[in-house]
Image 1: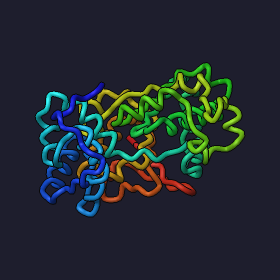
Image 2: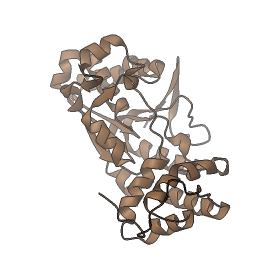
Image 3: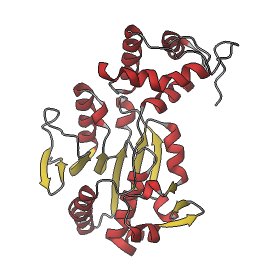
Length: 295
């Protein structure tokens, strides 16, 4: 959707860069936090300046204050809010990111869940990838499921719910077409088995795409979180690092409520639930910690 300009004046590419004042920074920082829970500290003021400058120019606005008012009052504020989410979120990811953790996921977590479900004759598996970016994580999970279950995967009811704040990255994820750079940490035999090379791109196998359901979600919206189908496993890697402690607690509590008894939460290797939640029982494995819901 195109957004009408705020005024008929064009902006010269040679116009002096607009600087964000301390007050404007606080207004925008608090607005972003209220909307999506992402907290931008005082030492990251440059992020507001760098990432929102292009939006201000495109809308023909004169200051960060005008942009703040546009987000609050303009008839097109909803569309611009989507753009804001896209520029303030970081989408650095790849297939098979953090192999030691994924090995534990396959050999311990996933194997245990599928073994238990098989014994109960309940071959219905639900996994949630919260903060899925351009799809590399949920598709990696789909690959690992196929690697573990092999042909038996066809007899299971499997759904990976993959959510992100940005509609732009979700659109990219749904296409399932990736560059060689996105596969830089992927074993070569996996690439050969599950991707088809088309010119300089790699197209994901359709049977993997069918396992993943993508949708926009705001982790600061309790109503949206409550609608996610209950899961055996939740992935939320390299997401909560952008939240303050209060937001972290709310999100982690939502994951706990979503998980089925005995379910597992996996977070990024640089993230921790220390001083955030005692509801989970940490299981220490080589290269990662699995947070288990015991009740």
